[in-house]
Amino acid sequence: MVPVHRGKGKLTEMVIDILSILLILAGLLFFLGAVVGIVRFPDFYTRMHAAGKGDTLSTMLITGAMALQVFHHFDWAHWTEIFVVVKIMAIGILIMLTSPTSTHALMQAGYDDGIEPVTRPAKKGIASLDGGDELLPVPGAEMPEEAEE
Amino acid sequence: MNAMMETFFIYAGITLLLMMAPVFYRIMVGPTAIDRIVAVNVIGTKTAVLLIIIGTLFENVAMFVDFALAYALLNFIGSLAAARYFNKTRPAYGAGASGEGEIN
Image (cartoon, rainbow over all chains, first blue to last red; front, side):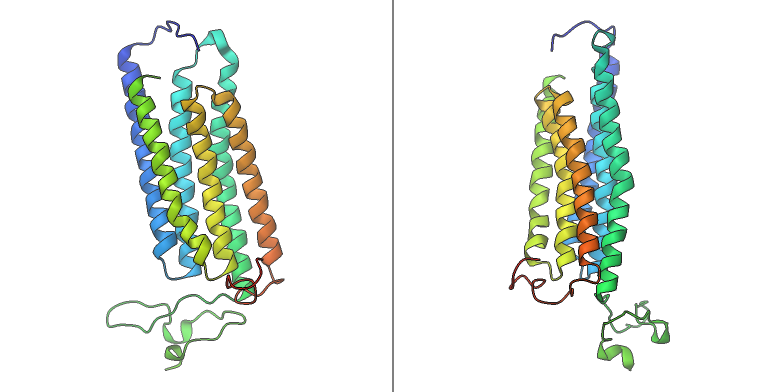
């Protein structure tokens, strides 16, 4: 790619660079949260929660930063490169639409298969999933013994 | 793209790749089959992002962004197909789901 003079100042480039660095760092931070949730959470449903939310947001942030970088190096001499920016943003919007959809479909499949959510006896002052009669019926799953007391 | 942004993109890609490694742990030991599919879905999404970063580093984003788009689409289709397949057709805690029997 031949460097041509585009009439954009050094200040604009610095602002764009700092903005995309901040976006990528935020995306990596959210992905770290998703990874910690996927590895450490005790339950299928809670792991799904971490994967669905953190992964989607970090993907959108990083693709936004990359679209910003590519759009900054765009000039009208090579005007077809605008489609690259459009496609990068299309990836972000596509993942924004499809990742919750697939998370919902997989969670529905797991619920229909009878994966039971984690339940734990209520400690003092801590709200718990098994609040007496308020337990949601899980098809095909056995309640743990603590819930019957 | 100046040298500072190139170095930053290299380290961001390496960090992204290193953070995929704990998700492979969930693929290996996931107690249910759908846990593994969720982890594969996360890794596929991050691979699409990593492809865009690689394309920026190679100064050839126009080629790599098509790979990333196709990869994200195939990831979505595959995860929906797996969800339909495991919905009421396979037991969650059965043979093949514990990692000791046959796969799927």
